[in-house]
Length: 198
Ligand code: ZN
Image 1 (cartoon, rainbow, N blue to C red):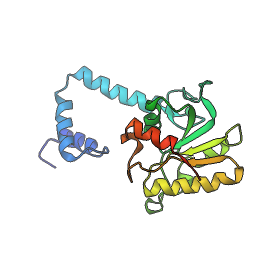
Image 2: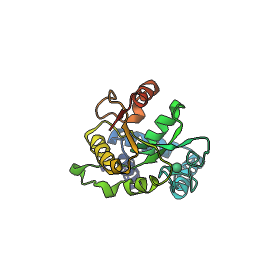
Image 3: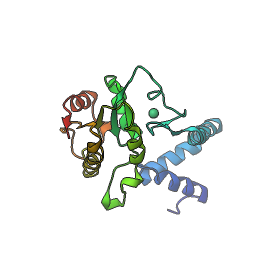
Image 4: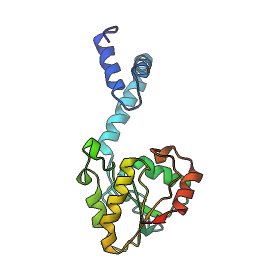
């Protein structure tokens, strides 16, 4: 990729390293950025840096947030006895968009994958277990229906069972390997309502 100058090449390389951006898109974005007014480029760079510096994990549910405790965990009107376990903050947002789920969440930031060398200690499972000592009555496992998501669901179920807390799994019917964030709200709600005991 030595068709362009060093600076352009470096920009293209950095952009191409982002998920979902191939080399063609990276080139298009790089030239777009270079042609943008300088103030807009500054603003974009600043927003990226500020997000990186200020976004942190909620000390309760581990979702990404600007505060120590995220607005969902801090909300007394939510049902704090029901915890829905999701793989990432995007999945949480997908359920929040339905506007029908009243419980709170736990964000794992990944799923167990022996193939990729991701074990139980590499995701936020310990944090989930420490939350179960309180008033929790049900844990809804809403990991993806991929092999990793199912493996994680089984693991969590085994971990929680001895505590006597009810463990449920959102209904399948969600396409295999499907990321929750791409699934429409009606399907998400159906999966939630049709959840089964584990
Ligand atoms: Zn939270």
